Image (cartoon, rainbow, N blue to C red):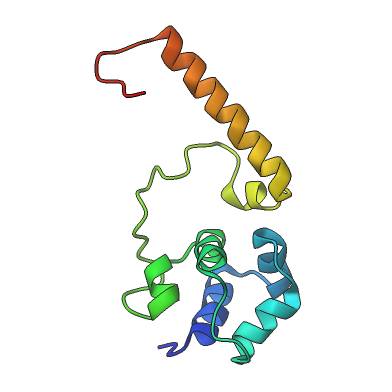
Length: 123
């Protein structure tokens, strides 16, 4: 069992068959930062980057953060990512563009709800 964060991150990379550079590109950090975490020179990524890393690598967020549980038992609902494009492809897009995509999706959802009002819908 991987008993520290860096070892769990290395195990998650192995399980996902990804390289450090893939993860760095996928979550928007430097490959050196990934290397420092794995080497134990820093304890962990930020909470946000750790969650993004877990999603990108397809491992359980709680396991990556704590070592408790199983790497492959995902605690996220299976429909968390409802789009046909993979989360990996989306995370490879620059953050500014991700924000624009999110705004467009929000616009489309709001437009649909405006055209299809229901009594249960909350503002």
